[in-house]
Length: 161
Image 1 (tube, rainbow, N blue to C red):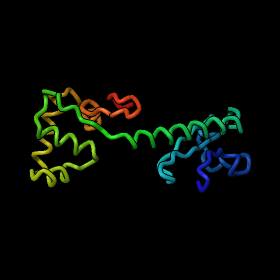
Image 2: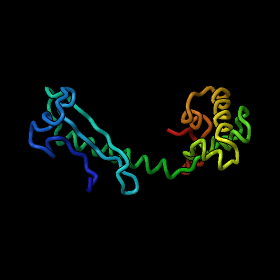
Image 3: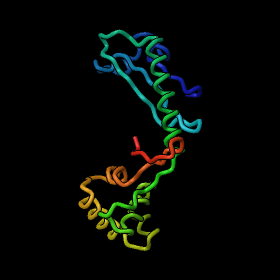
Image 4: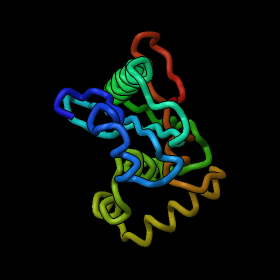
């Protein structure tokens, strides 16, 4: 983890030891790779193989390192681009747009209520109304539908990937 490099079970343990630690047949071989943001480990990717399959090798690790580097870089790029809300959505009110923006920032219902000086129940009811109006069933889906990301290089807006 200190060097943020992908590893497989036989790099860290003697051959066969992993199978004793994790006896599941579908986890006979394991390969793990880090997802890094601002120099900190924020996630990972794991691949497993059946114990009767070939163990992971150096080529597999190189591929996983490339994938982890790509995902870590993409994460940094996505975090550097600001969100722009579509206010031309005639389906929602200005107050609902405020709620949607706070949802996009990761606020809880109680924090949204405190920020907008309304009750948590009012936030819940507004979200239910917004879900119906927009034809969505989750907060993430609502934000994706209402939110655009500004593409600085092209000067155009695009839907988040």
